[in-house]
Image: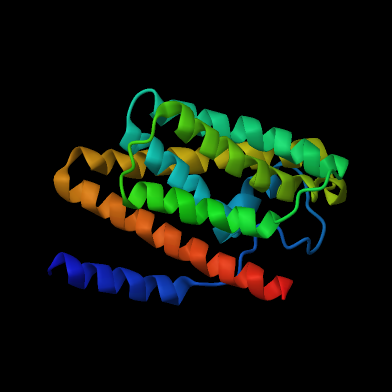
Length: 200
């Protein structure tokens, strides 16, 4: 099967799994640690961005492979505190969608950004993701356990991205990682359209 045929199949499969972002719907009451661990996996917008951070770190190799996945949860926790405090953050859903687009394209084009710039971009997007979930903490049955679970789950998703990024050591694998990055960017475009539609 030629690469173009595989990409067409990949896009088709993406359309089958497309569904609204569920990472921060504010529906129901969050629980404790287990709820925090499960929550990021239920939200496709958060899930794909977290995997993209790991993928990009793997593409950039040392020290980015560990620096990016450490930076994101740390800054995300600060964003969560800002959300908990009720500080204003305009364009929240657009920022979250933009994270999937930008990080997906960085992976798709195998962008060799300077370490400081890659870290800055990851930190910027972490603020949006953390803020969205910080707004949910007051409704949690156990806010501290829920927040801890969410941060741990985020780190595990980064590790999944790093694991997939190990494919970059082989030419064919590097092509698949880049294709996955493009797919993540496409998901981000879908989230952006959904955010624009919800704002309209």
